[in-house]
Amino acid sequence: MSADKTPPRARILVVDDESSARSALTELLRDENFEVQSAGDGFKALGRLDNFTPDVVITDLKMPGMNGIALMEKVRERLPEVPVVVMTAFGTVESAVEAIQQGADDYLTKPLHLGQLLVVVERVLGHRALKDEAKRLRDELARRDEGESEEGFDGMVGRSRAFRDMMSLVEQVAGSDASVLLVGENGTGKESVGRLMHDLSKRKEAPFVAIHCASMSAEMLDRELFGYEAGAFAGASEQRDGRLMQANGGTLFLDEVADLPAAIQAKILCALQDGTIERIGGSEPIAIDLRLIAASERELHDEVQAGRFREDLFYRLNVISIRVPTLRERRDDIPLLAMHFLKHHGRANDKSFQGFTERALGVLLNFDWPGNITQLENCIERAVVLARGDEIEPRELPRELMTSGRSGNEMPLVPGASLRELERYAILKTLEHVGGSTSKAARMLGISPRKIQYRLNEYREEDASSVPPRRGTAARN
Image 1 (cartoon, rainbow, N blue to C red):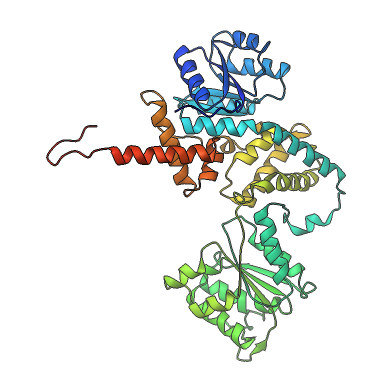
Image 2 (cartoon, rainbow, N blue to C red):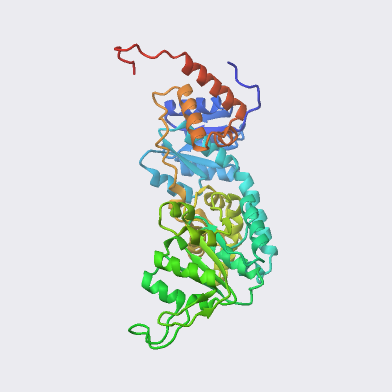
């Protein structure tokens, strides 16, 4: 079956002093429709640049005469826009991280994995787009006035589809008094969303009061929420209003509401139903008028099914449910958020920045951010403190940003496996990862959806034609 007659996807220069590794990598890339030239050392590689302008350079890190870092520096002098990927032996990832901190765009570990190879190549091929984005953001930052009101929204900035969909719903329901349940991972900014809803509501002149339900014992939470009369318990020397009273006329934000003890759940339900509360030790009902916004990292419906959360309270809280997207789902917002935090923490530390280098921005975009916006802000604050110039460099970012998710140990190794086997494994594993979407898998692998469909039909025919071993006969390995 002949390959599609399409132009090469990109031009790649492979540099490795091990001839077998160099040949294997060259063939892998050519089979994926890349135009490839190779060189056995750094000096020959520089000679290739006289008549071959690559879109990507892939070089071994440890080579005699001129190592990968030295070659990278020479390439940068002649072709400053060309991304460089370094290869290092498995178990020496520390060296690859050092290379990234010195300016490499990405790294690969040997023995190479086909899936890892294609993902990394496609990632660095977007390097010029990242540079354009970094320049655009620097220009945008320069145009903005220092006192812009954006700061008042505590990082609520973005333009991704996921962010805009959420904000559209927030704006739609902010003016009502309906209870709202915000669901999202830790660090996604649920409290910021709740505060924004308050700021956009008719209650904006009244208090916004937040309490974290998972950080206190049941007894302490009871006192904090409902207040107490003087003499209600040992140490209660004077009357104190609880958070419900403090939020009267405004908004009460219950963070991690799934962690409310059962007794407190019952008291909050009564307060919502009756519109009154009683202080601990008191007997007179006190009228309250507030809007309740609750937030949970866990799905409350699942907590109800497990018997850990009252169903009637769930329906009271879940009048309107808004899902706060993860940073992984709003990856397009990472540069804008990073610039927002850079400006904020730069001012707090009496520093001024142009922005991020394209490689630092690439590191931020390639990380999955399990801690979401909170983790991103902490990362930028750290970089601001450590920064030595007017741009944030990769060396000023946490090292885990450059190593997370790169082990690739689920993929088969190149030695001993045919290219056909590697391609099948990569396609099937990627389809599994993206839930069967051929378009998403195609983007990750850097091939066309049509090619994936074609290969899947081939695999079905191969599997259907395979004959199982007869009963009593050992199957071949």
